[in-house]
Amino acid sequence: MLKFLCTVLLACSGAAFAQSNVTVTGGLDTYLGSMKASGDPARRNIVGSGGMTTSFFGIRGEEDLGGGTRVEFRVIGLLQVDSGMSGRFAGDNLFSRDANVAVTGPYGRLQLGRAASPGFLAMIQFNPFGNSFVFSPLLAHSFIPSGPLGARNWAAGIAGDSGWSNQIVYVSPTWKGLRTSLHFQPGEQGGKAGANNAAVTALYVRGPLALTAVAQHVRVSNPNQGMPIMDPTRAPVDFSAVTAQRAAFTGASYDFGAAKVYGTFHRTEEDTASKLRMKGRTASVGVNLRAGLGSIMLGAANSRRTGSLIGGILERRTVSLGYDYRLSKRTDLYTVAMADRLSGMARANSIGLGIRHLY
Image 1 (cartoon, rainbow, N blue to C red):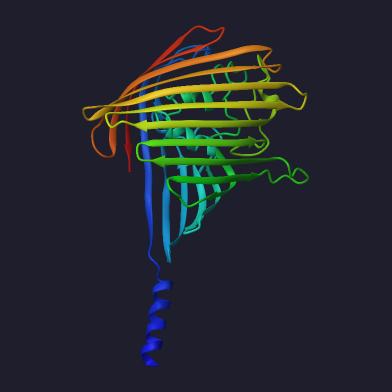
Image 2 (cartoon, rainbow, N blue to C red; image 1 turned 120 degrees about the vertical axis):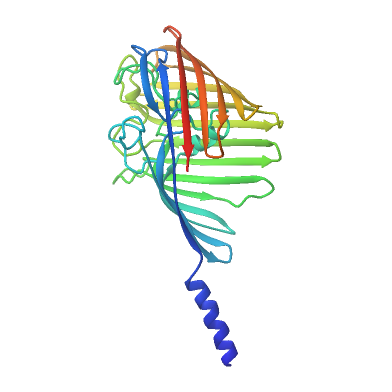
């Protein structure tokens, strides 16, 4: 009997003092650049932040509850290394990258809080420039506007931001290389149950081959409510009038060893309260070539928008060529040249030289 009681106490003690750890995490990325997107009013010679990765800082941790179950959390903010300001832009939330808690186990992962949007998660895995908002043609077309504030010539192609607040995410266990996820962001507005964001994703990885598909419906702005879901611009195109967007994204990559190739395609459909419509499509291709202690990155994207909201056809073509040199496991140097052309506008060129350190 005494032996049995000791065994029970030891088991309870092990559960009460489950293994846990907390890690400080972050990355600093800054670059020298001569930057001009097609449609911008003037060239800017800058010391910029986040050339290849948006600079970030924060903590993440987990606790092992036993039986294959863990509790995980992430509290991670973004910052601008060039100025020391927090966030991606003035007024951005402090922890706009991650602020979430999750339970993960044999039956999948359930997460609550702010985290990356499903479309953004897919795109950063299927282009050679990863999560570079500055130099990736795919991310530039999808998330970065061009032209002066309030009078954009090009609004971000994917509505609802690269991160969703108040998000509920379920990620399934991986089965024979396939993993699926469900995303839901309630609008939290009384009497507007239909004002929300929702998405479903699938990711298949088998050896060197990776495939993904994402379908999402956006009707809520981020990181906070009350803003237009695309852009506040009202002229030359009233992008602020868009109230809903349906988007479908597919991507593929194959790693040959010496080179990894990428391809993506996505379509969008936008609605307005006044029944004006817009449709868009973006295709991208890219390759990452191993070269010495670094890699050569080449990416291109082509976008086209039509519909009554546009009143014609709007096209954008962007190509980037870069080299990323590894100084160590955590630090790299990079240089990138980019050419950008928006229909009706002159071609614009940018070049940058930067350093990135992850910790």
